[in-house]
Length: 222
Image (tube, rainbow, N blue to C red; front, side, top):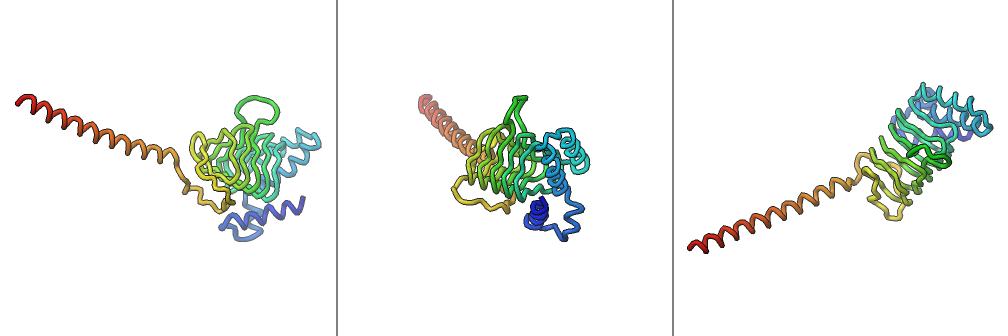
């Protein structure tokens, strides 16, 4: 348990350039507080002390703005940057070296029983405001772009953006977790640009047809 606590602090320094001292991180980082509270709540949850586990998680939610169900399984070196508005569901499973940003939801899609929340594999990054919903798996080393809504399985080493989420990069190489999550491909914008080009071509063809018709009418009048 204490080894995990130490790793939780160390990963803050690796992921957040604003971290200056151990005292600052331990006392002021709400994401770290939420993870530590979850470690205790999850231990009580596993011992079937459900009320105590839920009480700890709700107190943590009140102080940090981060809601992690005590039943969620979270691996080592998990990092929540800023964290306000993060929601992690009961049957969610998170691997090692996972990073998520504020406003992320790892939730369900309805009132179904059993496994109803996502499984997040190792080395995944989920950017600001993304929603990963349902009993799906996000493969190792993948990135979910800011504001994306992911409803389907994501293969390893992939980058997903858009609503609904679409895989836009999958090259089989390990993806660097130092992602600038504001600078991602936008397949919707790319498609709109393609449509604009097609419309311009059609307009040009129509103009040419009109000119030919005008010429033909002029010849017939002569």
